Amino acid sequence: MKFLFLNIFLLITIYGYFSSPGGSGKTDPPFALSRIHNFVAQGKGLEATVIASNLEIPWEILWGPDNNIWITEQKGIVSRVDPKTGTKKVLLKLNDVWFYRTAGLLGMTIHPDMNNFPYVFLNYTFMKGEKPYSKLVRYTWKLDTLVDPKVLMEASANNGHSGSRLAFFRGKLFWATGDANNNTYAQDFNSPNGKILRLNIDGTIPADNPVKGSAVWAMGFRNIQGMVFATNGKLYTSEHGDASDDEVNLIEKTRNYGWPVVQGFAVDPKELEYQSAKSTHDPMKAWTPTIAPAGLDYYFSNRIPQWKNSLLLVSLKGKSLRSLKLNKDGSEIIDEKTFLENQFGRIRDICISPAGDVYVSTSNRDWNRSMGDPLPEDDRIIQISPSERVNVFSSAKTQNISFDLISSSALYSQYCASCHQQNGLGLAGVFPPLKGSSLVKQGELPFIKKILSGSTGQVKIGSVTYDTQMPSFAFLKDDEIAGIVNYVRNMQDEKYSPVNAESIAKARTN
Image (cartoon, rainbow, N blue to C red; front, side):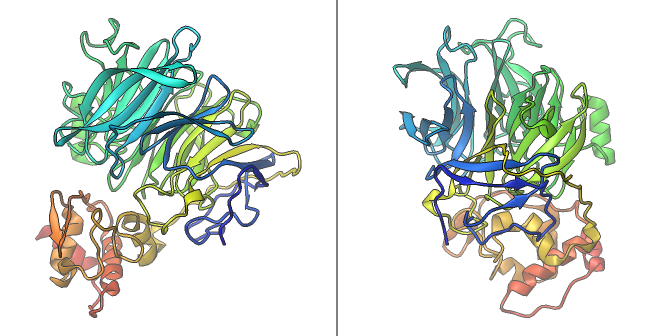
């Protein structure tokens, strides 16, 4: 049963909910809001209210100068929502957006001094001939609409890895670009891709940038999905890893963050050698299995005291909100707690009002339908604020999961289902099916080698052509890969004998 809760109060006693795999709170897809959700926030009751629904893939949400929430929707709409009434006002409809998978209208930021500089900055993908590009454009807010577009910069794009987050600090515009699915760009100083760029508001390069004539502030990124300046002046980002090592980073100018050679913390000899040669910077935190971190914000308020001086991070694959407590000077993450896991589906972005209320937006209608086909109301904006109705004194406890005990099904869910779907049928035209795969039918060795090596380029399965990269999963343990292989082989109509860790070890050396 699906319910649309527009301006209907959902009481959520935040009991510091920290879910375990398969834990409580998971609903049948898409995500019905048909009951009260209980989860944990240490020390204070909170409540969640759905303030807007029927959105179309909201990518960016910002607290605007008019005390409305400004939104970009991926297909090309900029709008604002009154958080008190849920009323939506469209400010701009773009007609040149290239919308495909994770390409489209993405990042947005608003000049902090709108009285003197009434500018709104957008980042979106478009086609130039037959090639996609990413465009940074400045608009002027005038008479409650956006006019006078000025293109500030363009960069290569693809159907993914577009980055796109934007932020302001001390009058300068920061733009996080993705590597556009090209592993050479992030380490090429002359390419704008895989970088954090620092620009003047007219698109020119500041005279005090680290390298004269270059917009590059920091480099070595794969696909930044969240970026925020905290009140301490520090710049933090969240970033999608490949098959492993999603990251949160503390950004320092001129530093190299290692992608694609170093993923997560530098640990193996090749990574350590590269780190020594290039002075690459380790992340503050990395997640394997990946969680697909997305929007990131800094919590500064006393309104929700347990989150003060924390980074608040939302995730797509992880379907959750995380509080990442910082130490006093903001240089380390000293605690992590997870909330809302599997309650609202994929969560794309987050913003915080001046009063200290938290808003998150869901992304259940995007290209990734791993949880099933959504309904029109499944993309929402949800307000989280203190509740006087409930007084809860409880603490969330971090759970340490022993990955040696994870079942084959859980391994497949963690590493494969977000692309190939839990049933192995894939996503037509985007991710190939594993059920009925000719590769699986070729025998265990070709399938194992594909998992170990990954793949790039086009592949044709039946009458459908797929052009999707698959990362290498060689970092997994032999028994973990064996579990995934057996799970996929058990999907097939044919019967296969199980493989074991020894089979994987042998394949690594062949």
